[in-house]
Length: 270
Image 1 (cartoon, helix red, strand yellow):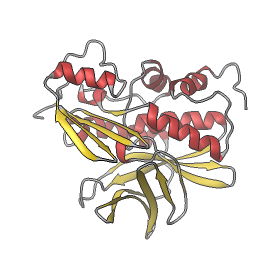
Image 2: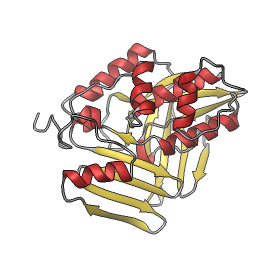
Image 3: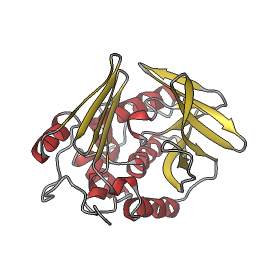
C-alpha cells in the first residue's frame, strides 16, 4: 500500500528504521518492520535516569524516538510500534507482562508487549525487551519457536499464562509471563509512571543501553560495556563519562541529551 500524503509520521518512522515506504498489513511486512525497528532503535533509559517520565503520546514518541533519533524502554518502543502498525492497518492488542528475568520474586506488570493480527494469524510482537528480546515477531501458538542468527526464543503455556523463554545452560529461562487481558492507554500510563519513578525500579539505578542484531548483543551498564557473539562474551570498563558518551553515540547511535550534565543517576541513594 502506498502511504497517503498526510501520513508524515509513518513515513518518518519508516525512514528512521530503514524500511521501504511500501507497506501493507501482511505477515511479511510485520516481520520486516519488527526486524528493522529492533535493530535500528536502541533500548535505553537515559530519560528516566535523569529524573524524567517518558511521554507515551504520539507527538512525544515521534519527537524522541524518530526525530531526535533516541531510544527508549518498553512503553516507548512498543507504543510507537503499535501506532505505526495500526496506521498500516494491522490489528493490535496492547498487553502487559510480569518480568521473570531477575529471579523468582513476583514483580508488578511493568512490561508492555503487543499481540498483532496479520491476515488470519496472530503474532507476539515486542521490540522493547532490550538485547534478549525478540528480533522477529513470534507466531502466537503454544510451542512456537524462532531462531534469528544466534538467538532463539520460544513461547510456552503455563496454565492461563503465556511465557516467553530463551535457552540458557541447556535449559530454558523465562523472560516474562503474560495473559491476554487487553490494556488501555491509561493502564500503560500508570505502569510507565510507576516504572520511571518507583525508588526500586532498575531503570532509576544506573545507565542501561542495549542493542541487538542477529549476530551480536551489545550491553552498556553504567561504565561496563559487554558484547555477546559467536565467540562468547567479552567486555571492558569505560574510563569516564566522556568515553561513556562516545560509546553511546558511536555504538548505540544515541546523542546525549542537550543540557544533561551527567551519565550518573540523579536518583542514586534514594
